[in-house]
Image (cartoon, rainbow, N blue to C red; front, side):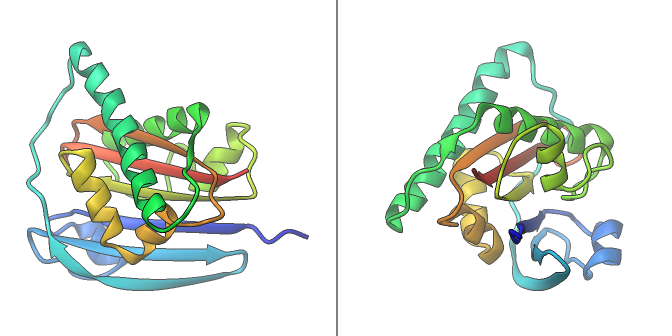
Length: 198
C-alpha cells in the first residue's frame, strides 16, 4: 500500500484577519504570517514561521483582456524562477503541466471570487482532492498559495523564505508544476502553485 504524502503550506498576507486569528494566532497589522502544515495519512503537524514584513497590496484590480498575456507570462516566470532555485540545489527542473496550470489558475480565481485564502476550497476541497477530481494522476502532490505579491520574483522570494513553501519548491520527488495567477479581489493578487509526482 502506497503512503500518500500531502504537503500543504499556507502563506497568509492578512492585515488582522478574523479568519487567521481564529485558526492560528493573532496577526500584527502589515505583517505576513506564514504557517506550514504537513500531512501524511492519519497524522498532521503544524509549524509556525516568524512573521516577515508584508508587501504593498492594491485595492480591487480588474485585469483587462490586454493584460492576459502578462498573466500568462507571470505564471511562466514563476516556473522559471522555481527551476532556477532547484538548479542551485542540484535538482531536476519541474516540467510544466498544462492541466495542472489550468487547475491552479481556477484555484486562484476561486479564492478571489469567493473571498477566501485557504488550501481548503469551498468549491474544490483539498488540493489533492481537487487534482484527483480533475483526472490528474499522481503519487504525491503539494500546493503553495500566496496573496498580495506584485511580481513573480517577489512571490517566489516569499515562498523561498518560508520553510514549508521552500520544501515544496525543492522537493526532489515532485516532477511537474502548475501555476495560477489572478489579479483582483481583496488582496490584489492571488497565486497558486500545484506540484505533483507522477
